[in-house]
Each structure stands twice: as C-alpha cells, then as structure tokens.
Length: 304
Image (cartoon, rainbow, N blue to C red; front, top):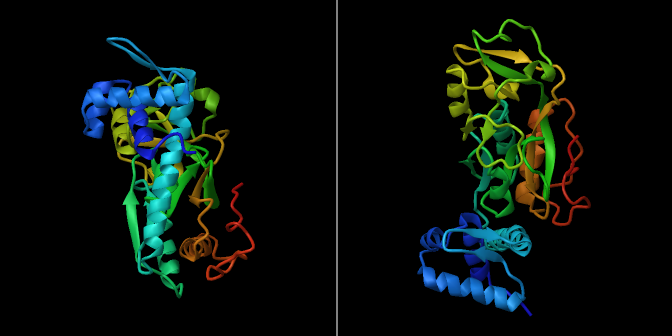
C-alpha cells in the first residue's frame, strides 16, 4: 500500500524547503489552509510529527528531515521516470548535456565533433546550470549527461568517467601578498577570506556568498576574498588578477556523469565519443553503444 501520494510529497517538500506555510503555499499555487490540512493528514497517516509549528516559526523534526531527504529523491525518481518514458517514445529526441558556463576545460567542441561521427548521433541540446544544481538535472531526468567537477560535485548515484585532471590555483588581486609567488601551499592561505558558495551546504568557509564565478571574480577584484579554483575555470587569467598554483591542493577532475541506471545507447554513444575526444591516444575499450544489453552497467562507472 502506498502511504503517500506524489502530490503530498510535493506539498511537504515545499514546506520543508521554505520553513514557512505562506511562502510554500505561494510556491505551490494553493491556499495556505489547504496546505496546512494536507501536512496534518500526512503526519496522521505516518504516525509521526514532521514539523514543529509556532505562530512565527516552523522547524523540521528528525522525522521531517528524513522525509525531506528521501522524499526529494523519490520525486526526482518519478520525474526521471516520466521524462525517460516520454523520450523513449521519441526516437529523434535530442541528447541533453548540462554544464556550467565555462565548465568544460576547453573539451566541449572536440567532444561534440567526435560524437557527430557516431552513426546514431543526434542533436545535442546544451543546458546551462547554476553552480551547484547540475547533479539535480541528471537525477531528475532534465539532462542525459553532464560535465561535473570532482571532488566538488556530489556524484552519489551517478556513473561517471574522468575526462581531464588539472591542478588548482589561487586567484588573488595583483596587489595581494601572494601575487608574486610562483606557487603556494594551502597553509599559506590561512587567515584569508574564501567564498561561501550559494547552495553548497556544510562548507567551512565564512566569506561572502557567491552564486557563480563571475560574481566571485568581481569580489576578488575589490579585495573581499580570494579563491581556489580548477585552472581551466580561469584560463586565461582575468585582467587585474593573478593565478598562483597551489602545490598541495588535491587535483580537480572534470568528469562526464549520467544517471547510473540509464543504460540507453543514446547515452553510452555520447560517453564513448567524449572519452575518445579527451583521450585520443588511448581509445578506451567500451561497451558497444548499440548493444541493448551491455555486459557492464556503464563504461567503467568510476573515476580515479
């Protein structure tokens, strides 16, 4: 027996995200009293309290936090199932690639050219995301494949292949104390203000919040912060700023990722082309993208 309907999960997730019934009701385009009744019905049916309510405050209980996390995954799975079903009925549907602006390490044009040579190549629609939501595009089916950066993006539940590994650099104003160094170590950055990325939980940095690289570079220029980034994201070095290699920072990896359960030839064909474009000297041995039942779950599926 299914104890919660998809619509009820949507209602609860909206309240859990907003922690405010009025804002959640506006987001859902329903009346606030109807939303309050729906949440009470969910609590009664599950036999647990999900929210602590007061006239000025809404707080998630432990049970509410659990339903928020797992309910979001469930909604993503339903959305992905609907999109995959519709796309399966359209043999000419384009392949959708998500990335953040400038987040391809210069490899995108070569990947697209290599994919165009595949016998079953389709049009590629390029989707641009915010700094942190590319994994959401892949998990809920809005995109088929995506370019992500490890270890920064959460790859849980995603198959992935490393396309490119690179060093990380610290970006500082030209007059900064580190600007004249040929290299630095992470310990040299102690006491500096680093950005707090919008939408990235659990970070230790307490600097100004930034939503994208352009905003971050502006804040660096005016002396509000410095930042450590993969080299390709600031290639060439922006005007008035200096890049200094960080010798002991873990390398950054550009990875091509896709839903681990997605074994469509459409996806595997693009993965094959992307790997061939990024590693032309090796031409890795991959499953035949036209094989409906590949022996491997996905090409390698792990990155190192």
